[in-house]
Image (cartoon, rainbow, N blue to C red; front, side):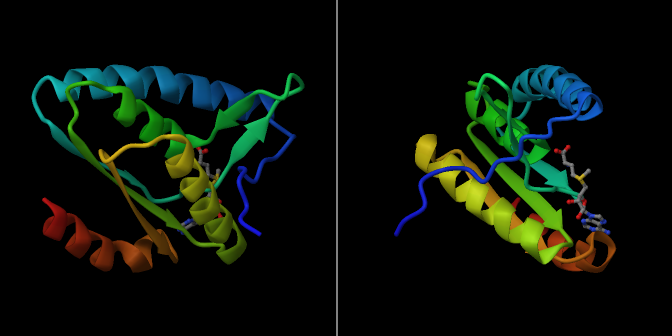
Length: 136
Ligand SMILES: C[S@@+](CC[C@H](N)C(=O)[O-])C[C@H]1O[C@@H](n2cnc3c(N)ncnc32)[C@H](O)[C@@H]1O
């Protein structure tokens, strides 16, 4: 059976909520400003996690990988974005890949290219750098 929904968590802690709120505002301004100068951008998250939270009202809230993807997707001047995500824990990595697939199904876009890596950021860095250089 095809799975259609995000893997979610309920325990959306206040500090995580604030962290995501700040990141969302900052990244939206960053993407808008950068989009004035560059139509292709790269986003790198070395400690990606996989999270999608569901609050008491059943509203969904994304962690940083999908906040970034959503923001870049909505920024009109950005025509293409490479989103590089590194996660060390296998289960978290698998959930991240799953949630990306769901996001892609729900957001038809050709702008966002996800590149996911399972491993520690330090150990993955050389491979990551090679891919970034190939995609520039
Ligand atoms: C706080 S969580 C991620 C939060 C996410 N960036 C967000 O803001 O929604 C940190 C993640 O980094 C992963 N992690 C820890 N050490 C790592 C390393 N050396 N390389 C890659 N991932 C790592 C953990 O498994 C965890 O899922």
